[in-house]
Length: 411
Image (tube, rainbow, N blue to C red; front, side, top):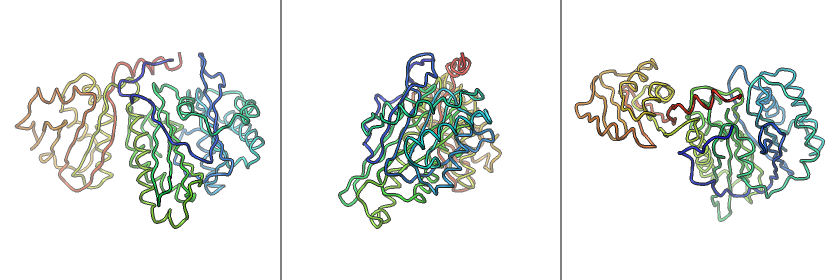
């Protein structure tokens, strides 16, 4: 199904820095009814360190299980990454395991590296088995095509499913006059409520980070970015976020340690950009919505309330229709069952105060509130009045387009 580009999409795919120490290519497995590449293969000839966070779904795919196992067995070492679109390889039991084993054996032979250093991911329809050699049969022909010149746009496009635009983000910083680069690509537009945590995201850097540092940064920034976005409240069986560090930037261990916060900030920026692009490509989305809750008893409590607002179909449909129905926001806050001062609660839509003192705000102006929810980007803020906890999440509206896309997903 080819979809119209989201009205919230960036004007163009960004220019991303090349990451020394990685080669890549894309390929068509024929998983779609129209011509497109649906496989991305990345290799690290000199190896890389890595970290990852994955879905907590109890019906997770065997690809997720494999990545967790490989991370543990290798201590965070990587030599390759293989990602396909068109089929999630989830809930296919032994058939899925057989497909992965065949892929791993083929990659290990082609790369001359241990199979445990190869990471796998798949996205698409759930519960449909594929031939065990679906990918393995192509690996011998694919491997000679790996190159450092493959455009990031090509890589990001290869594992899209219902995405309407490829997602990329990058940054280059300087440490003691030496460049350090970061580049990330992601896919996802529906079944998005990451809990790591169907979302896949990969960030690459030439920074000489240890596996422990990769894991720390991935886990830390996932919580504040990918785990703070939601499109429809559904957590995929395949959610995967991984970071790979090739170590090719000319920095010493001492320079990395002295500038670790600077590296971390750059990583956070790339993660957040990618995460927000997922929301901007929410299936059928026409509005990007930022929700901030403060005054909670803890940051965790604030996030629970913010997500309650973000995942409310009634809130999301009202915003889709330019309806300033602030009572639905109050409802969503209350149903979260988190500590709050009901009669001290304040709620704003943009800079319009809509609720305070346990009632509609005395200054409430319907015309101004309607104008605030009629914009393509909307902010909602609430103060629960019981503490200093704070959280921000990002979501989109819920339109007829969401139903149309998902009603026709397999047809």
